[in-house]
Picture 1 (cartoon, rainbow, N blue to C red):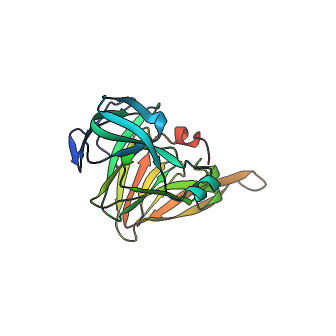
Picture 2 (cartoon, rainbow, N blue to C red):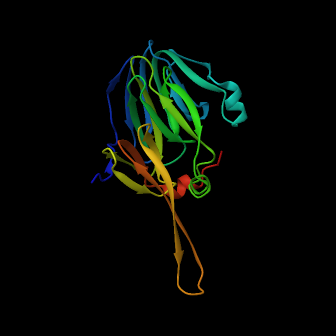
Picture 3 (cartoon, rainbow, N blue to C red):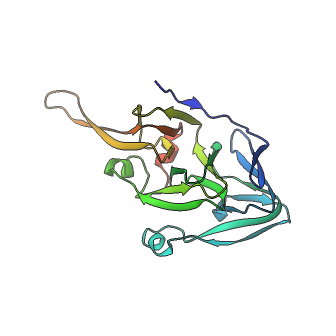
Length: 234
């Protein structure tokens, strides 16, 4: 049976196509990228921390603009190009990890936790299934979808608390509090489960809601679920 394992922290000098990444810091971690000029980086403007002057900042238009407007999502993304260094951080304690994607490989991620990605990734979205997951888990109505581009891509995510990875075999399952998952492979399916709770005859009760994930593939679990539940919905 697969058990969640803490994702490594302070991962430095990782080579990717056209860049080198360093993730450092244990309270409010930062992502530091060294670019060689061949691979642009896309990110939301408010996660920018600092850069060297050889890095240029511009605007990148995302595909599916009309659908994104209807969903209330961003139509443009900030893009970094050139040679030099650039760093990103969210204003929250947590854990930053990098998720390499092969060409055509897909991951899903909770809204508001994407940090940065290589610009060759295909970035879209899907509607969240399950009323309880949307409201109890604070997910809103949409989840981010990333698919690796030609030559492979990397997506970096900020998790609240610590991030634990669990690698599910085909047909293997794990039950996760709706606010606790942060990413899942496209091959992993999930369904909402609701358990009715009662304290006895004529007594009050409630519902216990969780998401059941089924492999094969990876699921990322964050320990700071209370923080995730307070994120803006939608």
